[in-house]
Amino acid sequence: MLLLAANAGCSPESSDAGSAGLTGTHSFVCANATKVRVEFLGDDGLTVEAAILPDGESEHLTAPAAGVTYFGDTMNLSISNDWVVVIRPDAKTQICQRAASNQPRDGHPPP
Image (cartoon, rainbow, N blue to C red; front, side, top):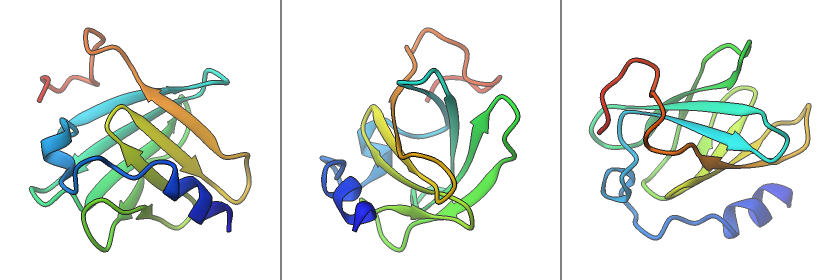
């Protein structure tokens, strides 16, 4: 039920992650100062690599269709423009905002 509530509040305005400006690698900062790195893979926007920083391992997540939650083994992500909701069974749900665009993006050029 929590997954549905989190997903309902974070539905992307666009059904295509690329058109929402979310291509390449992006950093997000959560309310508790946790940082999340999300790298969008492929042209369809249905696959990402995500990591909770600084010491989290990267996890491969996929979405069944554009505009819905990405699912992985240990976390799920719901992404909406400049926000991401991180849902993990071992931690509280985190709502995180995309870091300012003038910050480095892990060595990748801006999209």
